[in-house]
Length: 145
Image 1 (cartoon, rainbow, N blue to C red):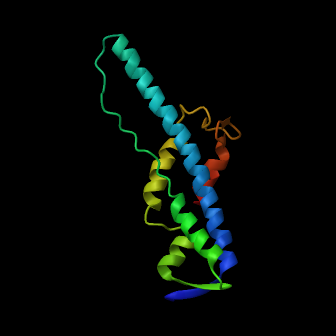
Image 2 (image 1 turned 30 degrees about the vertical axis):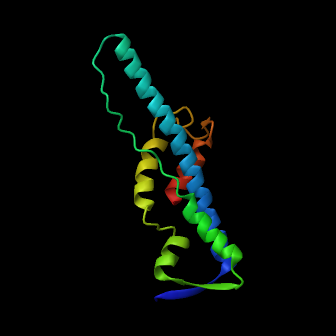
Image 3 (image 1 turned 120 degrees about the vertical axis):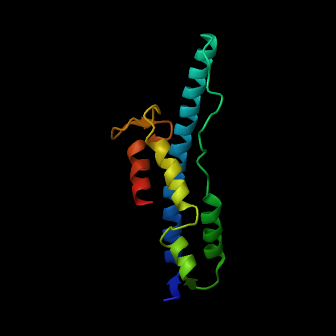
């Protein structure tokens, strides 16, 4: 099947749900990213004070925000004058199945940070919370992303 006709309200519901997961995962990953960067730089500072050689390279990929992709689809659906929309297989894969071109890299990077044990909001135990909310919510969202 090359295309499918779907209800605009269904596309909106699905895309908004996928965006909510994306945003929760991103927020948790960014909090952990800043915590990890801070930990590394604090260690470097201590090493400098102790006159030890430091690693001057900070290899921390930044979690990327892809909200604009969701926002574009949401706005298109909100402005549609039709009750139904025809999605080709590529659009269906992105909008409905949440399989964007960037998804694999997003999951790889955010998984590394959500699992970072130094992050106070990501302790690995259910119910642990930091400034961005319940870790188990972000972990669950990542598993179903």
